Length: 102
Image (cartoon, rainbow, N blue to C red; front, top):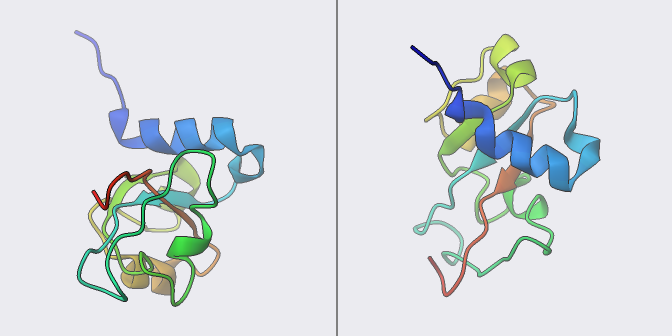
């Protein structure tokens, strides 16, 4: 029997791309297509962190992956971004890459 923690997988990928995310509470968020103009296409090389900061289009998207540091602070997968920030104000959120508005 093998157990693979894929819940943290996307966070690990983002931390590999951006080493400043290592050791800090962070989460990967799914965009919210119904808020602030919908989805903007962003690829891996683009700044996807700013989209999830306060007031960004994905600031209240659903969290799809959460780091162990964020879990220790009480953040859980499937929370909305605003709810997670109330629990962990230092939470760094990164939007998943998107293409063609999806």
